[in-house]
Length: 260
Image (cartoon, rainbow, N blue to C red; front, side, top):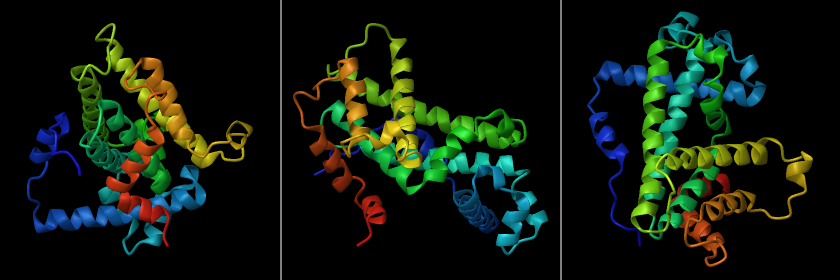
């Protein structure tokens, strides 16, 4: 049984963003989603370097001009995909924040969700990084980049909420408040790097020689144990916690990854 929903910094913003859309706005949004789905397919098949607006138009029912009405460039389209990725990641993290258990259980659930998302949406997962390259930032629209900054700020705030939960419960002690920013970054950097390598470089020596199948969890425990985040992995079976998160929070996504 899950705990009652716990408020996070994202909740208030989410309610403000939920203003009703007009019929025209809904049509525009649906068209953009369609074009973004086509872009994901192109990237999955050919990579980011071969994504072009011509290919998007050719694979859709719309003219090239219509595509440009929605996205000023392919870089703007990549930024839009990154925004969509961050929004989806936030929903996964929100579920994890309301996971039943200790503060560390919740962080493990967050990493489980991110691991699942990176497997379900490998292109979307990569977009968050690609959108930060100078090639994209120089050509994406100002409005799109501003929206991306806004979404990333919300995700960072949610990441900090996990830390505050641990501190309030006495399960995490920080020597200095400034360390919190480093911990949020370390969790994101470790998770992103781990999942990129597991998903995209399985034949590399560093990955192929791994003997355990739960390498993402192993890395999570290395990081959290190093922070002294209680309970330590020597005292709790976090494989069971990870599995519980999969079955109670992300069952639908797991079913998509492992269709019967």
